[in-house]
Image 1 (cartoon, rainbow, N blue to C red):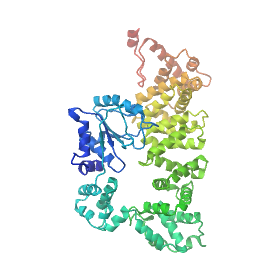
Image 2 (tube, rainbow, N blue to C red; image 1 turned 180 degrees about the vertical axis):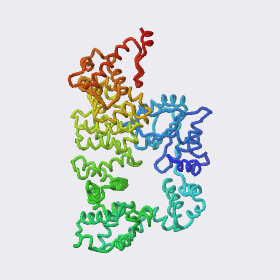
Image 3 (cartoon, rainbow, N blue to C red; image 1 turned 90 degrees about the vertical axis):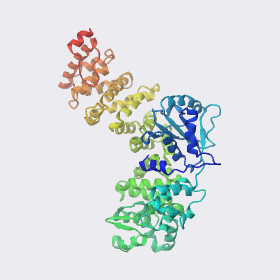
Image 4 (tube, rainbow, N blue to C red; image 1 turned 90 degrees about the horizontal axis):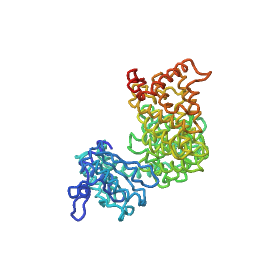
Length: 625
């Protein structure tokens, strides 16, 4: 949540009231503080457009929760589970359950225990739900407040008073006053206020056009350019919209490819044929800024509006549009460097009527092994998984694909790749849940992809301990398939061929403040692997490779290996590890001597502190004896 958003929440919020009663947020804060007894859970009931998000933020502000302690929860569940909701001390949490038509009894019955825990920690949870979905009955006693949609004009005025007070009168005159009807959502009213405030001119008609998605402008343009000779210019307009602010040569080549995709025939002469660039840009009303082409420079929001217009007005073009976008962004495609921009444009189309086509087509591309389309398909699904509107549904789809037995190897690998990317950075626990399901596949088809994804995740210092801990939890699972998968993946992470990753995990880099927890996790992981019959031999081989490696320093290797085998000296293979083999390096043999001495010392003394490599002194040994 940004500073600007919280500023508007604090100073431009319209607290709707009914029949002279206090505003609904005032009522919410009062319910949380009823009878001088602070409560910890509140439910805000309302349909979309009633301002529930803003009301929740305002209520937390009213309870004195600082902005930096407010958290939006992104639960990873098939059914809501109260045990997954945090209760961090003096924090505020917002849980949106709008997408759940009904809630299980276990959720309601668990609320009483959560309220007690959150109350002790002075935490506050606000649940957003629709009136028909919230039905606790006798299972829970939680205060709730029913929100009503605030008047759109009041919302727009309040926001403009904060953003651009000298333009509040714009809302009272033509053509803007007609845009705010009684049914207008609060979010749309706030968007209109933002457009007015950000307008660089006094042209109110332009603000109206942008607010309405340039509908009238585009209808007029397509009507004017409807002859056969205009078809290439239409293709150029679509290409410029998809590739906003991209070099002209890329846009024009992409436009020609789109023209051919829909059955057009280019004139002879190639690049020499047709009109000059400046004339063609004048036709589509675009600007050339340096080497790049822009529709946005003249009309803010026009690129997205063009794609929306084509998607809605020419539904028979949807498949061709997706195919073309995939081809130009594929490896060696003319727009391969602009993959992210193309994907984000197509995600916006997925929000429109008929937008389910986007997800259906891209998943089909992957599932059927269309390698030419794979990069764009993965990028689109990743973007959709992070989008506020599509995120919950797509993350659920990724979960289902990871869980289903009939998921193809190609689709499973794509899920793992998405989990390793931006999804894993922003929601690591969500990503790890899906990776665990993939790793548990009895066919083992996704194991290599999962291992690669985990390597990527554990390579990020800020989430290394979290990821390692999760993998080691897998290796201790009661489920044998999960346990074996966890142990195997852990051993893959300890492969000495990846020296940089190993040094990071073992805490040898100066910027790694989590060295001790990481080393402790390494010890736990190896111990779990040694106890798993299917991988125990591989675990011993991995430890032997560490002992023989000249790339790893003694103060990394010795304390970790000693901690792993201490207490397991009688296990089959451990003695062989300590003796070494004919393939052991000279360094490895020297380390084994040190390791045996260290183990003998620690039979009579407390274990050395993990991570320091410090052996007990003679005085400490005698005292312990």
